[in-house]
Length: 483
Picture 1: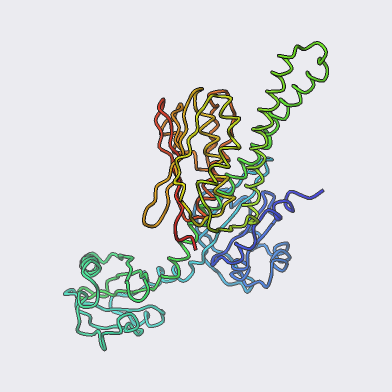
Picture 2: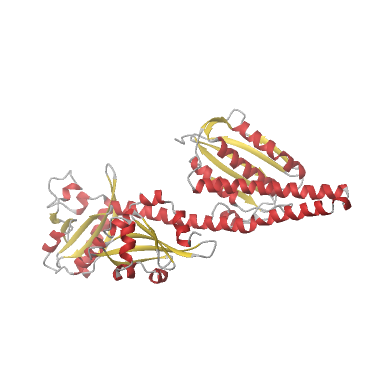
C-alpha cells in the first residue's frame, strides 16, 4: 500500500510549482523531504531532487535546515534562517511555513522560501560604514547618491543615469530636480532626519517610465553635512513578493477545499446513501404490509434523496476536474435565455413540489460568448438554492442586464434570506456553511464554490444581496472580453 509520503507527493501540482520564481518544498512530519521545486534545488546548488535527498541523509547542516521540529516552531508564520548550500556557502532565506492537516489527520509542512542574502549583507554593511569613508560602497552593485544637508547631489556612483537618462550629469542637481514631488519630499525629510540623528532610514517607492520600477532607498549619515542614499532596484523582488502572496493564498484555499472535500465524502455523501438504503430495505422487507400511500411516501423520500445526492456527485466531479486542471473552457456564442430555459425545465418538478413559481425574464435576444456547460452549472446551482430556501408558494425570477463591458445575470427569490455574516462566507472555501432549506433540504456549499470558479473563467464576479425574511438575489457577471 502507498505510504503517506507517496500519497502526498502524488497530490502536488508540480507544473505550477516548477515555474515559480521562488523556492518551495514539502516536508513530512517525520522529517522526510517529499518534494522540492527547481528553484529551491538550484538555490542550494544541487542538480536534482534525488541528489538533495541523498545528501540530506548524511549532511548534518542540511538536516538542521530541513528539520520538522524547527519548522513546527515557526509554522503558519514568517521567519528567517541561515541555510548551508552544497558548496558550504551561507544563504539567508526568508521562510513562509504552513503546517497542513489532511482529512486523515496526517500533518506535513509546506514551505516557501525567498533568498534575502544580499539584502541582509547590505544591512550589515551599512552598519559598518564609518562617517567619513564611503569608498566601501563602491563594491555594492546599487545606485549611490551623496547629498548635502541642502539636498544637493554632491556625488553619484554606479551609473545612476540608467534610471535618469535625461540628465547627462546629476552632480550639482537637487533631489527635487530628478524625483517627482511626492518622492522628493519624502527623501528630503529622511535625509534631514538622518543627518541630524545619525539613524538609518529606508523608503520604498515606484517610478513610472516605460514600465513601472520599484526602488528601496537606504539613507545613512556620511558626516554632519552629508548623507548617502543607496538606491536598490527591487522590481523583481516586488513581483516575486506579489507572486508569493498569491501562491500562499492559493495554497491556503487549496488545503481548505481539500478539507471540505474530505468532510463531504465522510458525512454529506454517506448520510444520504444510508437514507436510501434504509428506505429501500423497508420497501423490500415490508412491501406486503405497507399501504399504497406508505409505499408512495417512501418512494418519494428515495427520489428526493437520490436527486440531491446526484447533484452533490455532479458538483464533486466538477470540483475534481477543476483541481486536476482537466476542465476545458470552451466559450462560443450562445443564447443565454435558451440555456436558462433548459435549466428551469430540469428543476420544474422540484419547484412544483413546493408550489414555487419560476419566471425566466432574461432577455430573449441575449446572445453572448460563454462556456455553455459552465453557465448551465452556475444557473442550475443558483436556481436550485433559490428553490431550497424559498417557502411553499414562493416566487423566483431570473433576469439580465447589459452594460458596456459585461452582462449581469441574477437569480432572485423571496425566501428566508440570510444574515450578512453568513453571506460573507458563502464563496469562501475556508468556511463551511450548511443551512437547511425550508423543507429540511441539505447542502454542502460546494456548488457556490464551483460557481465562483466558473465565473472567474469568464472574467466576472459573483455576489449575493440578502435580507433575513425577504429573500436573496445572487448575481454574477460575464465579461464581453473573455479572450
